[in-house]
Length: 198
Image 1 (cartoon, rainbow, N blue to C red):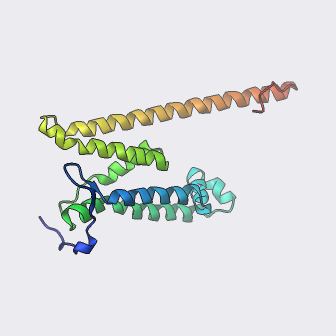
Image 2 (cartoon, rainbow, N blue to C red; image 1 turned 180 degrees about the vertical axis):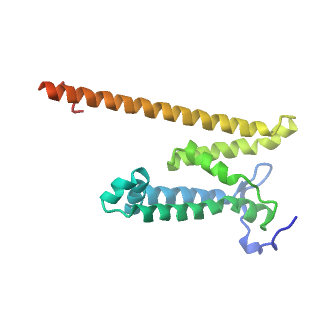
């Protein structure tokens, strides 16, 4: 088991809740990250430029936003935040970096972001759900239920949310297109129907 030297005790992250189901102190850090993400992306000028560059880089460049620079900034910030994913294990359990660090957490982070639809509240709820499912894997093994059932449940939830999201988006686009067509038809005929402006 190749790993680095043990971190000093001042770098250890204590648990908030002890016992059979401990709660890592990184939970508080995660709450601060979610709050910082909300403030940065949804309440700042930088966040507005960032979202505009992500939704439509051409329109953002037309409005005078350096979309390529904003995309690069988003990649650097998200990469830094993604680096926090292994800290609960490194600072709270093994206190070193090595083979004991869980793998596959990056893909779980992508799944959580998709499930939460990139909104802070949704991401927090999705992370809580995935964490709850992962914490039940040990109990499932005691009941002689395969550990892979947790991954299957997570995949089913993710696929269901993606399909429902796509279906709702298409339905909303069709509704918008039909309303626009009605308004255009009414304008060409010279009469605007009541409630069309709303």
